[in-house]
Length: 176
Length: 117
Image (cartoon, rainbow over all chains, first blue to last red; front, side, top):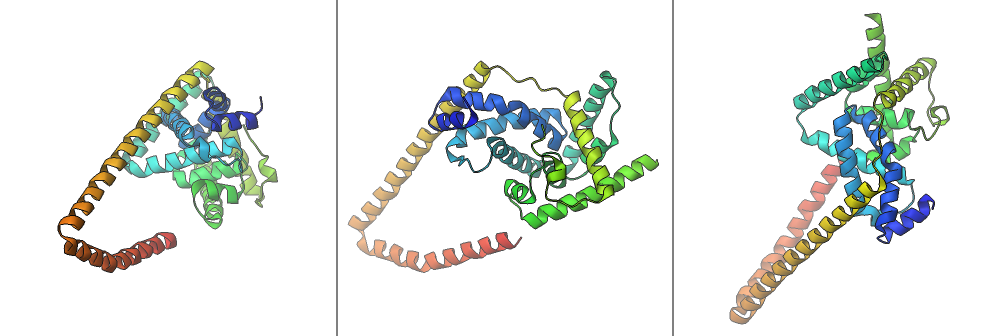
């Protein structure tokens, strides 16, 4: 059964079809959230929340974008809302703890940590998200604007300025 | 999982930007390697979907009951006022007619402010 059939059945209330749809997109969603949050625990929690929201709003999915893009839109907005609610200082501490844990995971696997992830973690998530969506997932500025509820021009400037600041920070780190 | 090739995306990158993007992509790919995701089985998803649907149905019934209770209360008050003191009802209507455009004006001003932010 292909994705379109599953979506059609899920919209009619078929629990099995909706479950299969969620299962197929689960790993994609966790990986996306891991990249924008850079925090495995928050990524897991937001994945659960996104799935709950998807179950509630599946009737509203119009099929214009891919199902995975629709899930990314929900997840992105949930993350933005969550970050706005949290205090910045608490966020920073949590982020540091998560980075240490990920560095530990990398060390266990005998892999070298990459500075670019440290730099990404330092920049604001409202800039990190469009960079990841644009340059890792390859979405257009227009699509990212729709996902984040901001103007296309704003996305362009965030990506361009964000990339510049990543380059600058990387150069500084490599210079040390 | 990359859906599109970033080189085909609608941005023009200079050499330095391309290098940064390559570093970014490599770093993010490593992140996937270091944090492997295990997808739960289908039964786990089915259980969650069932539970969530049950919760949504419960919430919808609760909302409907609250709405009906409030509507019945408001209607009873209106009927009571109309039968006992019709003049008071007319006063309420008059106040409503005056306040409604003011409230509408304030709402549209707030919306304009939000959209320009």
